[in-house]
Image 1 (tube, rainbow, N blue to C red):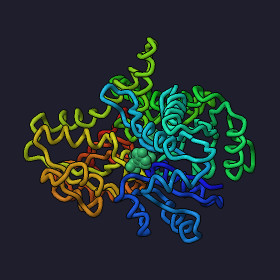
Image 2 (image 1 turned 180 degrees about the vertical axis):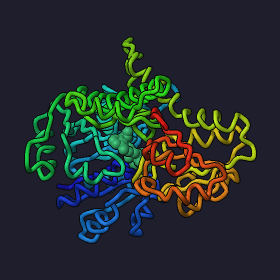
Image 3 (image 1 turned 180 degrees about the horizontal axis):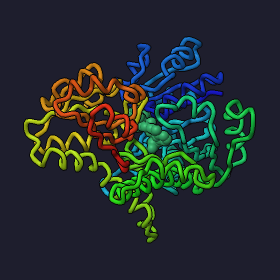
Length: 442
Ligand SMILES: NC(=O)c1ccc[n+]([C@@H]2O[C@H](COP(=O)([O-])OP(=O)(O)OC[C@H]3O[C@@H](n4cnc5c(N)ncnc54)[C@H](O)[C@@H]3O)[C@@H](O)[C@H]2O)c1
């Protein structure tokens, strides 16, 4: 099949590469010339495990191409995936300007049947808007052409995006057009050889399904974070509570880890957008408002603990920070808890030396040349002479460090752990003061 993917970010590039891997001819369009240049030169603009070799393999096989040329991109694919960003607008609603611009580009150029597939996360009713924009562009040209609009939300996780796309739990297809449904069925057949994973529904339900999934996961995290605060006050251990409830199959273990808040490009903006969608139709979403408020508070919990230990005035204090990315295996720092942490430490006069295996360049881009933020080449390098260690991302390489060395390198043997990586008794034995989230420390 000939497929165009519009938007070559985390979702678009992974989707394009995986569709090419299955033998399709894929052209990825992006309006950012720098991104396309990197790809055309054989590079990868983001960090995503396994993506580099897959892109390289499919480019070499002649199945995967990159362009900034909209005319070429619209002409190319019978299926046109829209995978552009939907960032939050000032009022928290999803900004649809990129999605609708992509739709307009298709309508003003197409000259044969197209299946337009919305993969971006978009509010309920967007498929109707996309349909209207394409119809309007066609009418302006005075042409009548058949086309279908499908909602196909993406559930991949950054850091495991290839695995998720290649072996999806489910493939949600929102469509009311039989021809388009059979195109989607054929397109996804190679990804579901052991069982049918297609869940076909109307476009509105498909659009809401994506928000419901992210809102549910964010709710579990905020619920556990709030319980962790309670556990601290009551002298209970949230980690034991997690195991105690996760063993119930109705609850399960996933997304029950207490920590320093959720971040990333999806949960924060999608929770906000869903609350906004509710408000627009007069439907309050109190649970989600609480989820968001709990998360905002949670992103400051580590700073509260630091202030409790070192005082409000942190001038002349330097903190080692392990982890900048919002989660491991990605360089994405959108809404990352580390950003709030760094900003709050700066506000109190502190400086930070950070280490992250892949996100330092992204941090440099976000913070610019700020002398208060230095970067270390290894976890241990970040510690030398720092007052204490703060952990914001659960990278594997942080899980089993040499505590003896940590103790020697830090000015004060204190670890503020926003990801509950260590066994409190072990740190006690190592002579380190350990400050995790919601755990009993001996
Ligand atoms: N990142 C994730 O983990 C994830 C997971 C599931 C769903 N989503 C959703 O998928 C969508 C894309 O997310 P992302 O993280 O890949 O975003 P991204 O910011 O990484 O990439 C979006 C790309 O679209 C390009 N673009 C914007 N307008 C364009 C246009 N008119 N034509 C061509 N290119 C254009 C931008 O230059 C950018 O490179 C969002 O709606 C997001 O909510 C993201």
